[in-house]
Image 1 (cartoon, chains in turn orange, green):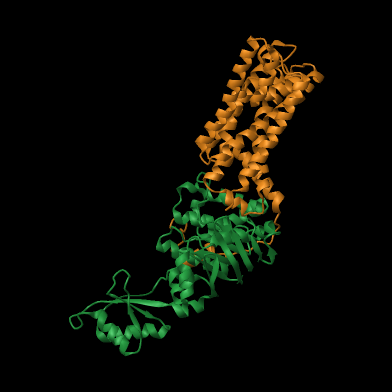
Image 2 (cartoon, rainbow over the protein chains, first blue to last red):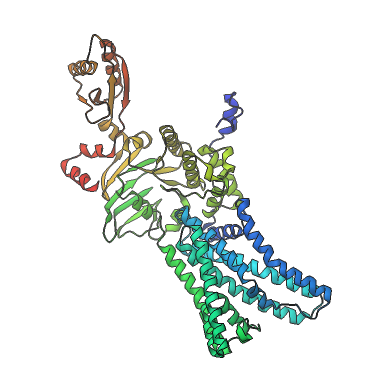
Length: 302
Length: 320
């Protein structure tokens, strides 16, 4: 206490400096919607380590750079070689770099929700004008937005680069738009899965491991099964198997409806009929994740 | 400020609150009860976070069942447990909580600086909370409950885990919340003695039932007990006994403090006010003994119940 009172030797001064009395607050109270927005922006900033320690900025920023770097290189190559097209489709970019995206979700989803559970900050939030649904929506929206920034930024780099390289405008714009729709879906899906898994445990380490497991093991299993099915030339099965992992789900949706070439073995994505199932499953999963989160936080009172 | 009317909360196996009717006015009110007496459940219901099984409750004239969000905008809450993330600074955390209460960004910053200063956090407020002492953490918890200038704060066991000095500082701070800040306080504790010194009014609950609700002066009249301890001299080899006899002679009932630390050397007497202190001083001085200590006994919650009738004693027996 001594350090902050250098004038302590002169009691009169000290009183004047430190005791200016309590001032009450008569200004506006902006209520529930504002509180929800505040939580959203705080969580979104937190997802990139802003407003937190320097250490916690390292990983998200590094992953962001890793995400954008290949796009920048591709653009540089395209401009330098005066190519007629970008080396990679907009829709394909996220699929290629899925490991980076998974790593980001695994590191930031627990950061977003497990911390609140572990340090019991959740009850404090609920002693404010917000309700359960506000908390869940703010957290879900913030992680989905953070993921969208992560996945859309390289697409923007590609697009701007393509325009600089004077590639065909209409063609590029269409591809860019399709890419954005695809990564938006991917962001919602991955954020939902990540948060559901992370909200189960207050331990950050477990959360990280569990999210990585959910995202990569399912992908590993599905792509192995698809490869086997492809060798046995049952291409119908390849499409159906793809329903069981998040990244193949997005792949299926975009190759059916967003003009993408599929990364499935044999390069054949689901037909429009099966594609509709893909869309339904994706939307169902997103809604399911939201529902599970609501149920999870219904019980977390004081 | 707070009014409940036969408020009940039943869980499948426990009845946390049993037809509790209580009125709490402005000022500092203590809510006393053993662990599991229903204090936290009551706060939860008053914040509009948990529906009551039956009965109704109003906070600041707003019904808790329908106006929960409005209540929470005007009420502060300091939980009993730890609730602070270690990797952010107190300033950062309290600003965030101010915004969560609906304060615009600039106001949130100003109020945070003010409030942290009022609770006694200065330069350290820019350091991560992880490195704070328990006392400092309690201050941050208090600051986040006050930052939006509520009309009423709920403080759940604010002195938990503090050393005697920290305890006194916290109690002084709680007193100031009302006298200087004009904010009414509902503070819970399982130590009655602590609340006696701080509160205008004390509500005692046990097993979800209201045992007693009265102003603190009522309590002190019946419960202030002095403990005195004296030295022995050659003239009076048993000083304790001598004091006892002398006081008996003057018509003051004295009990020996059996069951207390230093039993046999401690005398307990009921204080009637200033004159009792003077009497004890004179008696001991006349005998030429040394006064080792004379202090107000810290009452444990159970002692309130021993004053009450047998039926209530029984209820306590079940409750604890």
